[in-house]
Amino acid sequence: MKKSILLFIVLAFSVFQSSAQNEQPEIKTDSLSEVIVTSTRIDLPFKENSRTINIITATDIKNSSATNMADLLQQVAGVDIRRRGTGGSQADLFIRGGGFDQTLLLIDGIKMDDAQTGHHTMNAALPLEVIERIEIIKGPAARVFGQNAFTGAINIVTKSNVNNAVSANVEAGSFGQLNGSVTVGSKLENSTHIFHAGKMTSDGYRNNTDYENSNYFLKSVFNKKAQPIEMIATFFEKNFGAENFYTPSSWGFNEYEETQNSLIAFTTTFKSERLKIQPRVYWKRNQDMFLLQRDDPNFFRNFHISNKIGAEANASYKSELGETGFGVDLSKTYLKSNNLGQRNRFMATVFLEHRFELADNRLDITPGVAMTYFSDFKFNAFPGLDIGFDITNNLKAYGNVGYTYRIPTYTDLYYNGGGSIGNPDLEPEDALAQELGLKYITPKFSVTLAAFNRDAKNLIDYVRQNTTEESFTATNIAEVNTKGFEFDASYNFKLNNISQTLAIGYSFLEDDILDQNPELSRYSLNTLKHHFTTRLSTKLFKNISQNIVYKYAERTIGQTYNVWDASIVMALKQVELSITASNIFDADYIESGFTPMPPSNVLFGMRYKFK
Image 1 (cartoon, rainbow, N blue to C red):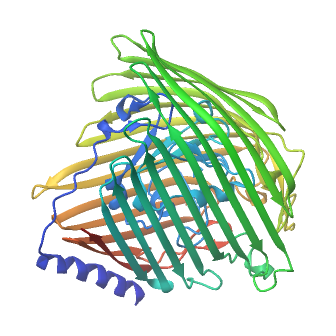
Image 2 (cartoon, helix red, strand yellow):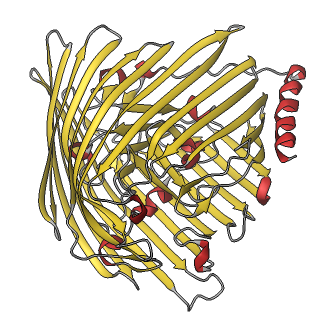
C-alpha cells in the first residue's frame, strides 16, 4: 500500500506539470571541459588532469534528488557512503574500498581530517545550497594532500559568485521530517558575503533514530579592491538517536550521540604572471559525546574534544620547463577525552611536484613527493608519478603510481568500550597503488574508464579471534591486495530543444586479505564489490524537471540491494516546489554495521527566492 501511495504521488505531480505556467529560463548543464580542478597546487582544466577525477557540478547537485551530501555522494560509482539512517546524521566515507579513515575530506582545499576517529569525517559536510561543485580524486593522493588521502580525497568547492539575494527553503515529509533553511548573498562595494543557516529534524523511522541537526555557514571576501582576504566559518551540531550504530540489537543498548564540528579559516592569494602563492591559517574543532544508554548517562559515557590549529602556504611557478608546485603545511592537534586521555600531535608536511609538457604539449609527466614529520610516528615520504598522453583533442590516456600512508587515529590506539578495543602498538598503514585510465570529454558526451591496483601493508581493521567473541580489537592485517575497475559516462542531449542528461557509473572491486576470515572483521571487508549507479534528468517543460536515480550494490559480505530515488521540481517565478521520494520500492538493506536503512519515504519542499 505504501509503495502504491508513493508512486501515485510521483505520477500525479508529473501529470500536473502540463498545466504549469510562468516558465523560467533553462539552466544549462555545466561543461566539464571548462572546469578548473583546484584541489592541487597546480590548477588544471578537468580534461588535462592525469588522474581519475569525478566532478559533481552545481547542475548535478540540483538534479540529484539528494537533500544532503551523504546521499549525493552515494550516486558516484566507486564512492561508498555507509550511512546509519537519514538526514546525514552519521555516515562513513570510502573510496575504492579501504577503511573509513582512508579518504580525506577538504573544504576549499582545507583538510578536515580528525585525529579522534574517521567516523567524524562527514560531520564537516556542507549544506548543498552553498556548494559550487565537488571534486572527487580517486586513487593514491598522499603526495598531493599528505596522510589520510590513502584511497582518495574529496574537495568541496564553495560558491564564490554571489548577488544580493535571499532564499528560504521548507521541507516536510515521512518520519516527521521537518527541514528549514535560509541562504543570503550580499555583494557590497568592497566585500561579498554568503550566509546559510539550516535545521533538520525527524522523529525517526524506527526506535531511537530521531535527530535534530543544525548547520551554519559563512563565507566572506574582504578588501576586494586591494588584497582580497577570504574567510570561511562553519558550525554543525548533530543530536541523534544512535540505535545499533555500534552494537547489535541483541546487546539491548539504547545508544545516543551528540557531535559538533566547526571551522574558521583565512586565506589570501598573491599572484603575478608566473608565481602564485596562497597562504592560509585555520582552526578546526570537533566535539563528540556518546551514551551507551540514552536514559542513563552514568552507565557509559564518552566525551571527546579535538582541536587542530594549522598554517599552510601553497604555491606554483611557471617556467620554460613547465609548472612547479610546492607548499608547506604545519599543524598541531590537541585531544581531551575521558576514554582516550589527553593527547597532542605535531605534523609538518612539505610538498613538491613539477609538471613537464613534451611532444607539443601532448605528453605530460608530473612527479611529486610529500614528506611528513609526525611527532609520534616520525618521518615518512610519499612519492608519486602521474603521466598523461593526449591521443586526440578529446581523448586522453593516463596512468599514475604512488605510495600512500595513514597513521592510526587515537580511537585505533586507545579506545576501550562498546565492543571495540584499541591497540597502542599499532603500526601505520602504507600501500603502493597503480592506475591506468582513458577519458573522453566533449560538451555532449564524456566517459572515463580506469583500472587500479593497491597493495597495502599493515591495514588496520577491528577483528576478533573467533565468532563467539563480542569485542573487536584494532589489528594490523599483514597484506591486502585491492584491485578493480571503474566506468563513468554522461550524455547530454536535447528533447524539444530542452537539455536532458543521462549519467551511468559502474565499479568493480575485489579485496584479497590473506589469512583473514570475513566473519572476524568489523570494517574493511564490507566493501562494494559491484556498484552500479544511473541518473536520468529530464525536462518535458522548461520549468519542470524530473530526476530518477537507481543504485545497485553487492557487498563482499554477500548482501545485494536495489534502491530507486526520484524527484520532481517545478519552478514558478520566485517559487520552487519539489517532491523527493527515496527508496521508492522499499528495499531492505544495511550499509554499515547493524543499522537497517529507512523504508520508502517522501519529502515535500518549497523554496522561495526574494527579489
